[in-house]
Length: 446
Image 1 (cartoon, rainbow, N blue to C red):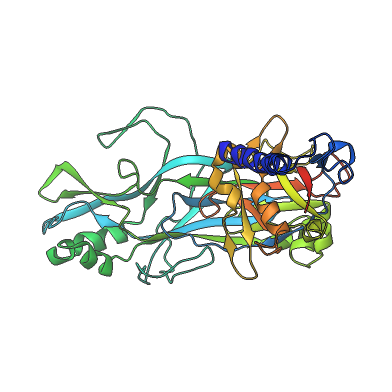
Image 2 (cartoon, one colour; image 1 turned 180 degrees about the horizontal axis):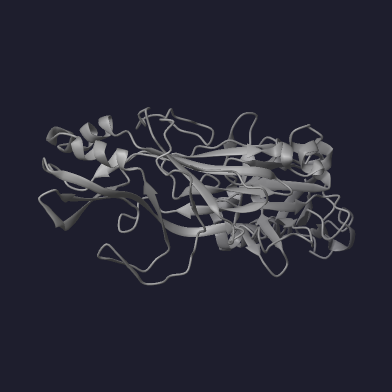
């Protein structure tokens, strides 16, 4: 913000300095110099407007989802956005090289334990989870996207296990571990545990050897009739997220043992999302699926999980660059209000939205973003139910022709690992505040 203010001050100082130079180079008194050219000695006019023309509409997005911050698991049936199912694919690594289970090892159980970070949606919803062993290898070089898939076995190792996520931090002792953070424990079929125990010592000599034989797991959930929720899972929290194999030696059954498999930053994993937008509200499906983009003038939408973004365009912006005057943008703030009746109980607001510039086929970081979040904005204000961005530099550079006037793309921060969705009033919203750009600018004759 300081950088922006300094620039405005410098520009004003340059104008004042130029006028002072003119005065100093003439013998006439300053009171009369230019009085026939500038009315009332008004050299700079400072004006405000919030009526800039805006065109906007929502569109379907896709995004890379490999090795992102959180894995997502769950299902929702949203009355506006339709249904969404979140799943993930992941590799594992052994916890110690050269481990030997012994010839007399007997499987007791196998549990997939996942560290829960947060929950989005209906906190009372029950999940039905399925776990399948991968038959395809996860590649370290493949750029996996939210729609990518891998082949897996058709045997459900979780047997349709059901659970209701709980986020309360309670101290629990499980197998000698004191658990103080939210987890979910999914019991798996012992057939996989038997396979892991029977691998030879060479399989446990190097992670690549192990991953070539046990390629990983695909974890998914059934859809839900209404509401539902999405769990955020910290896969690389090795204190909690583990595949735990419980076993004993046949000769000493009184001495149970456990061997763990982890997911680290060197393993490959990615999120996969399935959306059925045909189940959304009529206004939403008409805009997003049927291409009735004019509906975006009333309501716009954003959704994470490789879902929905909104294009925002200012079609008449280049007309500000006329032949007689130079426009200096002191401040331009894009205001994005939510509908007054938006549901924030089940569908809580995203902490932050993101705004990027559009070229014909790519996106770019707009110059205002480099000023830092405190100036740039993007955070949700729960009091006003709005998000605001300062886009002063972007507006001015479009006016000057230094940035193509293709528009901006609005989305949710961390869309590859966040489960949020949000609704924004368009520029012609019939109820509540409307989307708008509040501009303070100066007009200087060229």
